[in-house]
Image (cartoon, rainbow, N blue to C red; front, top):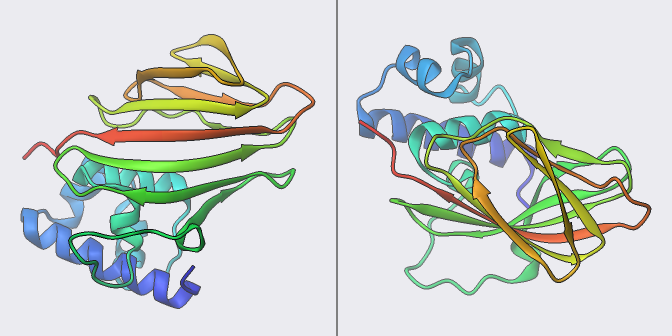
Length: 191
């Protein structure tokens, strides 16, 4: 994983490029993403290291995967990705982690994640851009998936798919660590 200055610089460079590409002002991006103009200014100046929720909101506004915002270098057309290339973008209070493994390019970008939720840990709650789709496959444990206020138990070996544009939360209400793979499909940004 790149160090924090490289990450901040990558976010700054990519944010400026995406805004220029779309002809958006900082005010327009703030409105579309729900991220304050002050935070966006700090990000574009490389003075801030955003959290995953902020990156997700900005990525949703642009219709790009989170990894596009944090990419520190160019990539070839075909890329074989080693496990060491994953980036931990979420850490749970009990030691769990959310690691982004790979992405595809827009339009209809997809993110591939590996999650470990330790007992008592939760992640999420906010809705992504309308049209976003999510899918999870639970390898170990039982995931409590809440979508639009409705709770679902997803056991080991099972998968679930749902509209990521609805409020949703992942939780481990059990006593065993939950391991899961997640795919997030992001719709193209609306002009």
